Image 1 (cartoon, rainbow, N blue to C red):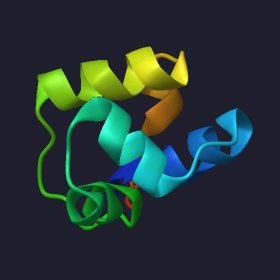
Image 2: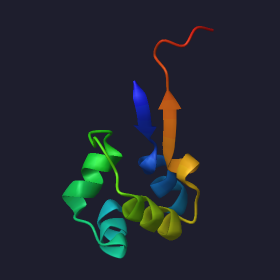
Image 3: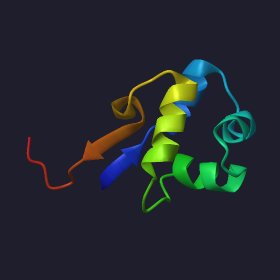
Length: 72
């Protein structure tokens, strides 16, 4: 699966809408939606920094690595 974006979880914890967050960090609601729905192929560090600053969290709170080949 690779990198999973848990942006919706942090947004819910901070009680902020997608439109409001997009405006605060300076990206379009469409681009935020792409990130939120795990459709993004990349994220700029400046965008990640803005998200962390606005949501008062760490990058690891938003991004998670999942290895489909992992054995338990």
